[in-house]
Length: 574
Image (tube, rainbow, N blue to C red; front, side):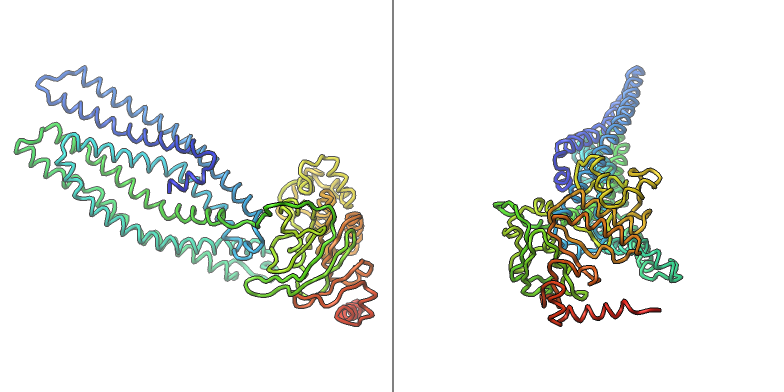
């Protein structure tokens, strides 16, 4: 466990090591009052009492406890600072790692699992460094030091104490086995309840409109109930083994006292050593019991946390090219591309070209492969076979960061963050000035409504932009893309959910955005793409038609069929 902590500490490894050394020294100092106490016992057994010496020793005992209290406080502050700092570093490492993984990683794991890793599991690491490590290390060292004192004073009684260790070891292994089993069940339940909590919060509008409440939202109720039951079962299952462990760790006095009395009465053990053993053995037992019980308490809990953190950090990044190439043109070409996910083919032998500074629309039914194509262009995944080229270069030969710097995406479901309007737009260009942000907002037709917000550009817009309308959110996302000014633009139907007034404003913003760009549009309403340069029609992961609107209408193929259906739908009235 300590080895993994040092690995997680990274650049702060030496600081953590020095803290652990100080904790060990603190554990050694905890045995000093016992030494002074032994010297007091010797004085009391002398024929004549030296009151001054006894008072000095008593003062030293008191002083040692004052020093120990100060050390304890300072070590706690140091451990807390390092625990918080290292947990911050680990969260940043995890966040950086997640940005470098393919989307396939996220589809294999539910949001609750990742939320648990970044939240609860990193907090466990912080808790271990801040609270448990000082507690465990000092107890462990104190136990060892006191046992060494036992050997120095009388090796026979020390060996008698050692005779109990097999019982303690068996009790520990028994407790450890049960703790490991129940902890695994707890972790599964924790993932599940975190996922259901997120589902419940995100689904509140649906739950309310269909007159559901928390007791009727079955998946949430079942997950919370299971989490409650698993925690109760975990506690119940470990109570008896824990008691057994504590009892066996505390029975040294029942072995040492009979042997000590026997050796004392046969004249081979002095009274002062017998008294010291009687006084020090409970302190020894207490340190050992606290160490074993504390270690057992955190071993599997922290162990599971560290295991999952390292699993995420150990995930394979999208491969970077050994020899990077530059892109100076932004035409895009698919060459015989095949792509599957979980052994299910999504694209089959897809080939088409997108000219530089042209507008190309992707059309087809749900599941045809439109979004998959845009994700592959942005290299969120890699193709199984074939090639995707940009400017004549295989995009796998372009560093991921460089490739993504050339691409902007305007999503249908806008992604905004619980920050100011200004910072949400500024995500398009790191370090952009306020003037650049405002210019992008003006081009995206959102400067006016931003001015009406309580704090203007500094208004906090809430999680997911919850304080803005759909049209306002969409224009903020377009302002972000305008600020980035990437030569390739991917757009998922940006106006599909908007009312006519907002649609007009968003369309004006889009027209500003697509100037001199290579644009790929996922189109649902065919009326919005009549004038694009090329339309690629997809069905079942394959290209079935391509051309402009007039050519595809003349072909009377799948596109013509969709056009007729949508034309008829526009005439429908309630």
